[in-house]
Image (cartoon, rainbow, N blue to C red; front, side, top):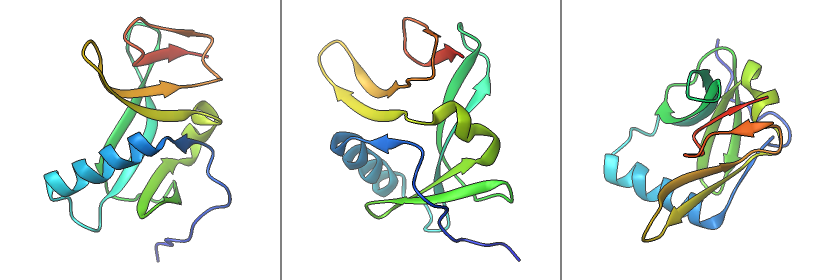
Length: 117
């Protein structure tokens, strides 16, 4: 039986603008209420690892967190890579998209979507 209990304090945070954009995306995409926002990392990118941000199903190795009516899942193995990270949304003339401010990143690429630890 799969548990959906929240695990302690969330290892990362979201700015208000990021939360607003995520709620807008979820509404616009018509995402099923059974979908969660997945935050994580994967191998690749010009600095070695890249961020993962997508709506997805909860899996056995995921921790569940709640942020203002948004259910967020993070694979237990990814928590150490996002610990202390802040997710922001930028909507400017030159840049538009999610920005990841990660205190664990030793180097980042110019686009801000990949990092190394």
